[in-house]
Amino acid sequence: MNLADSRLGPSGMSGEATLREVIQRLGKAIQGLEDAVGARLERDQDYVEAEAEVQRMNADRARLAQELDTSEARSERLEEANREVSRRLVTAMETIRAVLDR
Image (cartoon, rainbow, N blue to C red; front, side, top):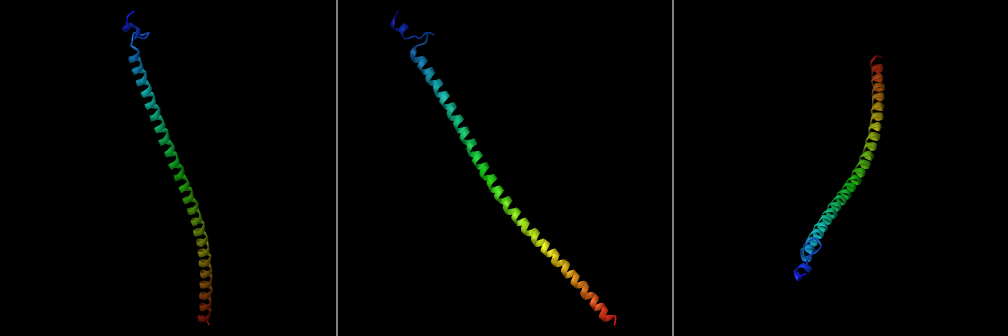
């Protein structure tokens, strides 16, 4: 057995070539892991942003519901005032007719 044969691994490749391949595969695996972590962090950030948007929308919905309730109450008061004014106008017109008919 010569010196060159002693450096060959079981597959006939030198230990140095095998080590290079293992390092390359390890580098690719690490890069894949980094890519996966980056994608996960992006998804997590998207989730955080979506959650914040949902909270803003809920706050807007609550504010709009309060404004709607206030507007409906005002509308009811105006309708009641309108009915009262109409009733008084009818009374006034009847009074004027009664005076003119004398």
